[in-house]
Length: 150
Image (cartoon, rainbow, N blue to C red; front, side):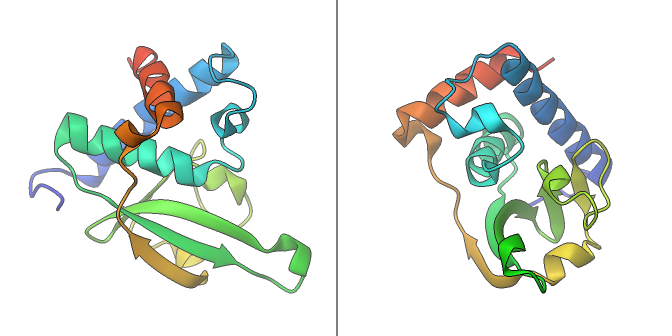
């Protein structure tokens, strides 16, 4: 649940801080090159969601759900899976720049309720986030990211 006094702008600020930390860690080559986070924002939206959801809960007591969907258009080669977080009706996506012409985002981040792109995705599934403490790789990634959060 989103705390009553927590505003979209607050969530956006948290998302900016987390994404910026990932980018700094990537630029400093802190992620193993075999780790999907080394390709951020491409191909790691599921890992990023698990990491961000843990951060939201651990640091701010905000429970987020993970949402998975499939993007399809007229070209079958453009079919792609995508993962984002949702808190109440607020969409949180810090890898929105994977779809630059389809999602209105600022610096790769979309936080809002009117995301038309997300409504067009197919095979939508809601699920709980993975407990990153059960994965040494994700836990190590999380520790790396925390070092870069201002």
